[in-house]
Image (cartoon, rainbow, N blue to C red):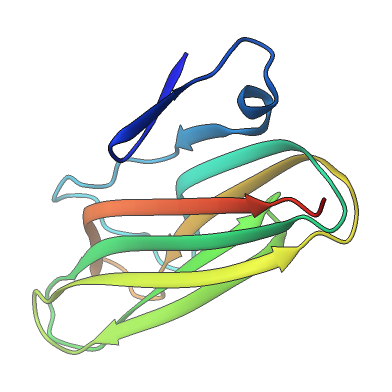
Length: 151
């Protein structure tokens, strides 16, 4: 199995430590024009999960999502959240606009240091809004999770 990281790639042997610790899942594809975020509901965009994390490991999160504010011309707010397993909040941010058809990319960063050993940790990027038929997801989604091992 080969993983590519920018200009580099690495071979991952079956049953290697690296292969056990990383999996990437695309949760949703909301890039068609008819896909508005439903009001008051967190929609999963991307997930990454790790297995066998240890107490003291630090997980650093970087995420971003592109979006467009549609008609009518009134304030629109989007909230991006990253959660672990899906009840533990890791980081969140809000972005808003009053411009009609404004396109934007909202980014967020955060980290957590694990206080216990974790057998399976899902980190998921969610998007939500309070306004119906107002926010469309557009552009790209990105979720990067880096695990800094404690030992």
